[in-house]
Length: 344
Image (cartoon, rainbow, N blue to C red; front, top):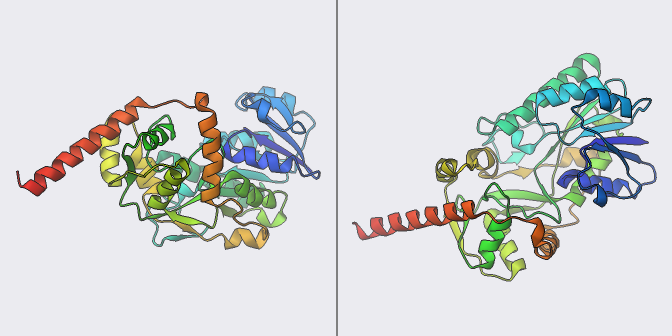
């Protein structure tokens, strides 16, 4: 069987291609601009091209049909329209990577199924994913375009640490603050539940849907079965670092209002995603992929990630702007608390 991945070297997709590289049933092609090509398994075929250059893509894929095509870098309707033009009639299955952030925030209940309402007024990223789903499902219903929709939640790998509050340069500054004994921001009171999934576990569910006739025209969420509070997530990271956690809880609403002044979109990433409890019911996926289970719980996954991150500091960039914001916010809140308590 033949699969084409567009992108294919990100957090989610790299776990999938590594799993497929060990499966002799699959002949896998990556189409991208060559990012991280040295990390791609040798038996994976690489096609260097910009997916937005349709003429070049058509030329390089001439005469090729696929059992599965999956686009990991489609973020708006124009991208999936382009994919429809390129691959309609050339694949038996098109898998669209959507997002669990597309679910309504907050939903009517904390247990999330594929039938939970899609609506997110807080995050444009999520609204674009919803629009992509609607376009593709219309093509399925009216023309038989063989789409499968996959909704990941917070997936991580050995190169990344899942956090709630960080700056535009990623998680690294928060890790540095932990190492330095400084307080770190946690949204809310830290008690809401969240789900993080190591990419090799995600790959089990995903590959089980590939070329699966029962997946056509359906949507599936793929997550770990492990739910942790945000305090537990941060405490587990601190334990793995061997440091004391100095947690500082701030409401998501205040983070969104103040972070905007520094260019941080906390309304989207927190109010529109991480500030509410979500527990995913993966029973629909497991009916098709019964082998889907959590092999890498967070206390193991975070150690894998920290081992990589701390041994490759040259790959990560500190974020003094986020550091400044954190210190200013904490100082202001501490001052306000003292003034209220003292009555002055």
